[in-house]
Length: 131
Image 1 (cartoon, rainbow, N blue to C red):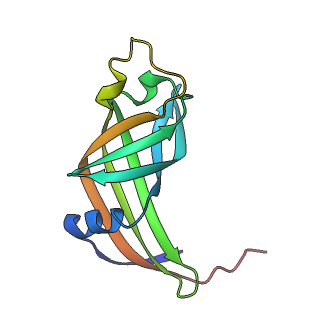
Image 2 (spheres, rainbow, N blue to C red):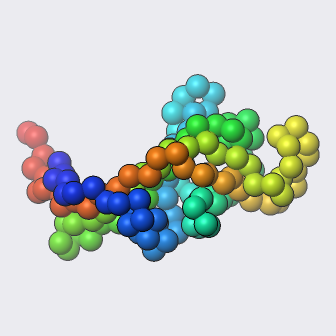
């Protein structure tokens, strides 16, 4: 269980996002939810997300509503932060349309301009396994 402190301002969320490079992208693949670890970078009010080498169907990510999350936890103090955003993912322009061919040796990159950006700092409570 975690104890949440006050929510972070959107500006503080963007500042925290800029301190990390790995997050998780939640999307729907063949009507089933999937969470994918991804590398990303913050770019002028949006997030450029590398999905890695081709593997996901382009229709899964192009114009899809997705969620993106990044967090950091200090194990020693059991404190951390979490930022989440939701919005529509769009293939990076260099990949053209979803109908055309694309190089198989190039990372798939999508851009997320979020509709919502939320975050908070928290303290993890001790965990006692149920017996």
